[in-house]
Amino acid sequence: MILFIPSPSISSFQIGPLTIHIYALCLITGIVFAWMIGVRRWRARGGRTESFETILLWAIPSGIVGARIYHVLTHLGDYVGPTATQHWWAIWEGGIAIYGAIGAGALAAWIAARRQKVAFAALADALAPGIAVGQAFGRFGNWFNQELYGQPTDLPWGLEIDPAHRAPGFEEYATFHPTFLYESVWNLFVAGTLLWADRRFRLGRGKVFALYIALYGFGRTFTEHIRLDYSYDTFGPIRFNEAVAILICLSGVALFAWLSKFRPGREDVVEFGAGAPSRTAEGDGQEPGTEAPATGAAEQGPDAPPATPEPPVAAKD
Image (cartoon, rainbow, N blue to C red; front, side, top):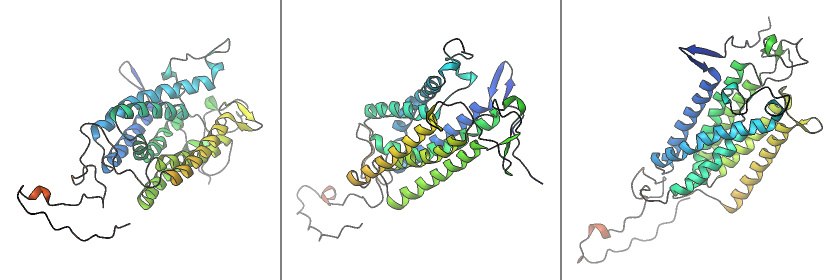
């Protein structure tokens, strides 16, 4: 017997006069996980929780606005002109895009990082795995909305779509590729790969984020190719969003290669402003193996004889 993936029967619910959209709950869950993973990695790199929270409190709202702007600009016919059926400002009616969220959020984070005197590349590296996990949770909102699915399929994991939500021209089909699930699984794979690569090769100076860009764009290219939702055509059968995914992937590969050659290693210090963690305090801004050598000067009085210098020790790799 063939078993398909059923679509949820509801996409929202009421609490008194409020309408709670499950899509929004999925996004909030993703943001919480991204925040939790990011702040833990940031503290492990020597950063302060306060600076991390300040930057994200600017980046998250900016990302939401950017996600809406990108969606409206790529679906102008729905918002402008005689064919308009939606309001560009009514974000609760649906319509956001991850490309705009990452772009606007990154810009706001960069500006805030400069004000906080924080190494933006290190911050981006700390955030990258959490962003991928957050996207995995956020994609389940598409499942509840019965949207952004792929082409028809009779595979056992095909997604059942109600007639009211089927794309024009595909009304006779009942099951479609669950692109929300494909992308969620891929994003979790990306997060795991980033964590492994960072631990194995001690990546830094933006290389973790560059690898995230490359891997996410690579996976998104395939899901975009089979999706049925509207997107401008650019080069023959290549959809606009698919072309953007290809460009993002190639940009990530190029950035990773450039950083690996010209920015090797990892930052020793990630914060430079007042209140930045001391590099001599264990677990507070100090990476393993970078303890400051003891000179003995602080333990001797002003009249004490000079300490005998220790013989040089070969540095450990």
